[in-house]
Amino acid sequence: MSAHGGGGRGPGGGGRQGDGRRGGGRQDTGKQDGGRQSSGRQSSGRQSSGRSGGRRPDAPRSADRRRDGRAPRQSRPDARTVALAVMTAVRERAAYANLLLPSELRKARLDTRDAALATELTYGTLRTQGLLDRIIAEAAGRPVEEIDPPVLDLVRLGAYQLLFTRIGAHAAVDTSVEAARTQGLGRAGAFVNAVLRKVSAQDLDGWVAVLRKDVTDPVARLAVGTAHPEWIARAFAESLGADAAELPELLAADDARPKVHLAALPGAISAEELALVTGGTEGVVSPYAVHLDSGDPGTLEAVRDRLATVQDEGSQVVAIAASRAPLVGEDGGRWLDLCAGPGGKAVMLGALAEIEGATVTGVEVSEHRADLVREATRDLPVTVLTADGRDPGLEPGFDRVLLDAPCSGLGALRRRPEARWRKTAADIPGLVVLQRELLESALRLVRPGGVVLYATCSPHLSETVSMIREANRRDDVELLDVREILEGIDGAATEGLGDGPWVQLWPHRHGTDAMFMAGLRRVTSDPTPPTRED
Image (cartoon, rainbow, N blue to C red; front, side):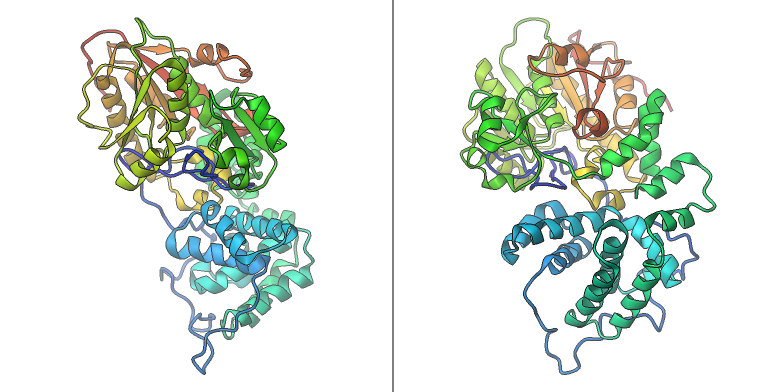
């Protein structure tokens, strides 16, 4: 979601991830962060030269191209060239790998085996980038900032093959050196060869031991071994609280390639029917979810025919909870999706509204994303407005308000392989301000007795529990127990939902993204914002 209202989503592993369009074939996992993005490089632990993006005089340069002025020799795309193309786009254009890779695979026309290899190399290298950079810095004897970026991409790709796959060392090194030649990187081949041979001198456990040598903090040690920035691992541990012993399991699940999650559109097809026609298995948390081990869901007939969409099971549950939360007084059928872009939850909410005879107003600050929502919901009782969710200019009195707030997206890192290295802890405070303003708007727009369902695709306490505790200090709000709402959904498993009243889903417990949700009901006609504690 873009700041103030809507954002993109995206998958990691098996299939494409979604903009939420019915039949769009991409995975809806939660809102993208609304804050700035950093380069995401993890510190190598060495003293930097102080030159951002600089290089030593003897470092290889991408300018060392063919002296006759002709473009580097092009060869038929293979798994490695596809992976490099995506990595380059991620680095140069801040592209999302999960959205770009499917089109690159189609263009390359790889067979099933090579497409699987390209997927593994792309997502794996991007997901472990921070760890690889620290290893490369040790092997190269210099910070990675002093290595020319195209050359660094080649070394990262080779190092990933050496440390994380069963590809032989000879093949991993030689194909990387050859790629330097075909990419026209001049003298870089010798440098790539030298660094990768040093990397190959130890296995992954050996390198992790080197990097952990002087690290005593247990969370920091786990972060190194699981290729997570330390601040993210620590945020996860804090969110787990008394269950912090589950952190290794959580980090491992965060690193695993996720399954493709489909949502059977309520009223169009059942999960049982969808599982039969797709060869998938039914989900456990959402009664509409179907899981596929892998594949491109956009090619499925049920998705093309708009009977199903691609949406993480946790995101499905958020929309379902918003439609089932208990009201005081009759449901007048006036529902609001305050941050609707790019449309995943709006589709599910709209389908549920159609069954109940309700209508949904969707608000999205970005015109482009608003158009995506309109397309995604064009067969449903959903009206989309382009407006800032903090002050959308709507008449108050909504029975139900879904606020799927823009957030850090830390709960969907398994579907966005490069995201963990783009985000920083400095992004959180600005997002919290935006979330607070949107929640205050939601509570102004909901009627007395109506419900706001607040959700984030992040377990960070500042974006979740702290936000809700602050809102609960208002004298016109009461918290609902979301566990009870979910327990009332037929076919939904409710184990491991915590102590309430909010619910935090986890990939290692529930197989979903780490979605947080809380229900707030207005109890008076006068909204009184709380006095915030400094």
